[in-house]
Structure formats: structure tokens, C-alpha cells
Image (cartoon, rainbow, N blue to C red; front, side):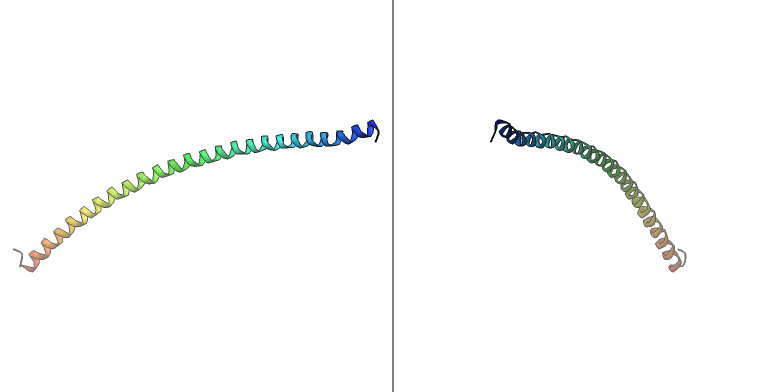
Length: 93
């Protein structure tokens, strides 16, 4: 094998290695960008979920308050109906 043939034989693996390293670097950069984008999306989703949770919690609290008032109103109405029924059954006493 001549010196030139030897040089070409050694040059091929070196170029292949350099090409592979460049492709790995490019893949790492692409992966880094994708991870940053995924992180941004996850943060946005978490923020949205937090706001939704607060809204639902406020709505449930308001509903619970309204339910308690309705139950109190129904209890008063039931008491009034019982008194009226007692009066009617007792001859209006």
C-alpha cells in the first residue's frame, strides 16, 4: 500500500467520525429545543389547570352556599306547612 493509499484509508474513518460527531451535535441541539418547547407547553398547561381549579373551587363554594340557603328556606317552609296543617286539623286553634 502506497503512502497515498494509506492516507486515503485513514482519512475515510476520520471524516466519518467527524460527520457522526456533527450529526450528534445537531441532534442534541434539536432535542434541547424540543425539550424547551415541551417545558413551555407543560408550564402553560399547569397554569391553565391552576386557573381552572380556582374557578371550579369558587363555583362549588358558591353552589354550596346557595344549597345551604335553599335547605334553610325549605326547612322554614316545611315548618310553616306543619303549623298550617296543625291549625287546619285542630279546627283553627
